[in-house]
Image 1 (cartoon, rainbow over the protein chains, first blue to last red):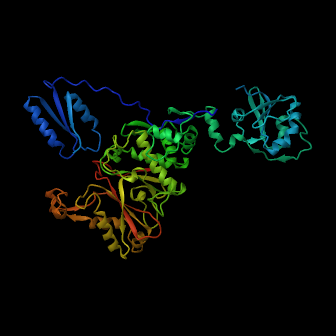
Image 2 (image 1 turned 30 degrees about the vertical axis):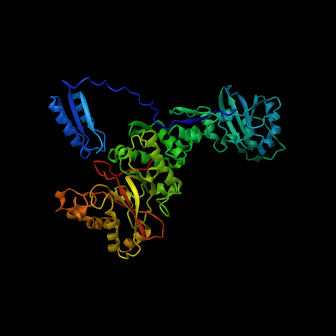
Image 3 (image 1 turned 45 degrees about the vertical axis):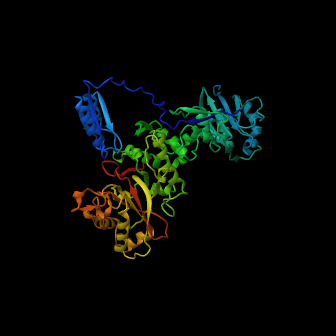
Length: 94
Length: 478
């Protein structure tokens, strides 16, 4: 009997991403909501409206902006958001 | 496997006429007072007198004894080799064995034959079989009934075309194409930002159809893609068309047989086709960048299978690598976030001024006639067109300068609403004169066959420059 054919895995050998999501908060009272503009055209329109609706309800809002949508957010920005907010809304696409 | 015995060892194969010639002296050697072990690579039917004969069907003995030629005669003492000779040279055999007048009826000398360990492809098989080469990558065992090519499809490793199954032997041969260590990490491959080793590149280069000698160029292309300014992550994810184009300059392109001539941008050359594909497969398999998942291209472009060619370097026109600051004679890979190829058919211009105007007009189409400083561009000038400039004394740099002038456009024609078209530059730019390309955003290369008054525009990603992708170059080393 022939030896079995063996191939070498060309991938990064990561198991399928099955990380669980962070638990959703029951409400937004007392939490700070971050709004991240990724610099895509008209992302600000969506985020401005969310800002308005959240602020009307007395929820603290902080605004952030990525330098360019074509690149992942700089580490400093990610750290800043993580340290200042409980929840983040990101405006994707245009 | 047993320990290698002391005394005399002769490695033979029946298919070798010199081994047959010296068969009568094996018994003589057995009587020399030293113990004799004959290792037969094919048929263990030699008359070895009082000696011992070993059938070396899996070539383990021959491999451990590092045999290249049969017959080989070795003398060992206290577990170590003392002396060896190969082929049949009576004086040498007498020296090694300590026997006098060996094979007195034989000719004084005969060359031997190649050991079976040297059969094509065998050295790699044996190195893997006997553990001289190990891999860090996971081994994927294919079932008896599975077609290896189909198995690669099933596991999601293919770009849609068949890949060469990456067996350990093929990957080992690929790794012999570079002096770099298999475990060397080239960087973090986007989009998943996982460490990309030379070994993973070799596996994907096998699948892409590369020859081992392409490895230095493939590695340079991967390293270039990992340079931050190239923005491989964004280029992969964008809804726009572009993918990485690999342009090769310098002696490496010639030595591996890349095409810079007839149909240079097309199909048919193994190095062009497989080097560009290897980069794409690394992004897919190592980086995890797959279309429909994180690659969100609205349409994509055929160049995302592979887009790689060499510049047809001409003594009169500086190669792109030199324009970009490298020395002449250095081999360099330049990556450009490229969309498709748009022809410039100009068969009537006979002056550089007229042809430059033709080029400029066609270059305006990059992204949109009314958008400037969005996408970079690569202008590919054919030899017949290039000759017109060269004969008029226009260097590549001169052509670039002339194009910059011709491509400085009145804002009034470009702003939103101009020409009845809403797309365009912001209204406040109406009074300005605007360059079509950002500084450094236009590259010129010479390529193509000897006949044809055609050149080509390869448009770049509309997010060219610091916000998205800047062309990058990397020297081809080893």
